[in-house]
Length: 185
Image (cartoon, rainbow, N blue to C red; front, side):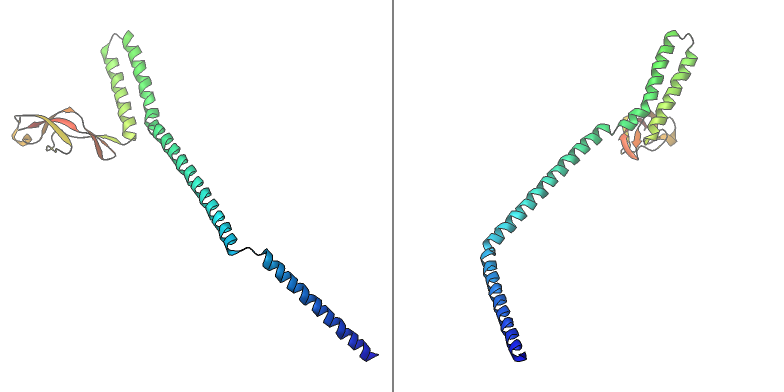
């Protein structure tokens, strides 16, 4: 009986192995049939790469448009700080004009205008504007524009600036307006 049972167990094992082998063969055949061909694989990779390229291009185009818009906005508002600092000076000029209509004495009006001028210079100095010192300095054609030469009043003023017709200005150490000067000869 023991031999008979062992024989039956071995028969069952062979049947199971046969069934498993048949199933594996069928699975391999189905996988071979369902497996994409190399051409299909390449087409799929191409479509994925193309999609990725289009998305990247669209993202870059949006970035470019956004930066152009931001630059335009920045250009429109770049003088805002200066304008805001000059508004109180404009208000002072309006008050001075109203005061001049009823003023009988010139001294207070002159003092008011001087105060407004100092306020304007202070606001411009905060933005980096500096006056050029020209009178008594040697003539420098890179900073000054000679309008005319006159005989020097003293010997030490020859080749130097005698008078200044218009002040020159620096903005952050760069010349924004050359001084118009008279040079002693």
